[in-house]
Length: 72
Image (tube, rainbow, N blue to C red; front, side, top):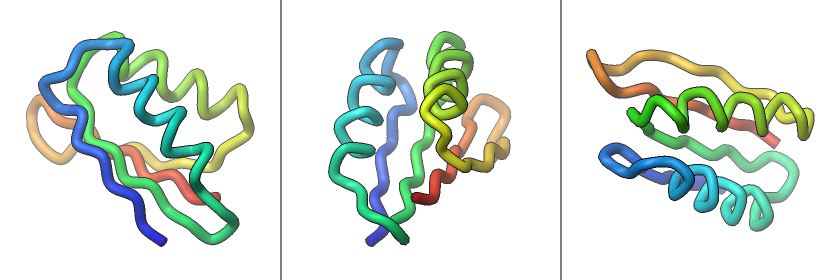
């Protein structure tokens, strides 16, 4: 299953909290795509993913937007 969350325009910790909720729902083989642009989220979300051992890719999709793709 592919989970998508557009957190652009939302300030930290809202995107972080919503991502945590999505990660709890995910099963092996699932993918989560999250779009963010808040400076705090751009720092905190990769820290969380690294700490919990998730594999992810991060790419800029616009001047201010970053997409993070997480695979379980």
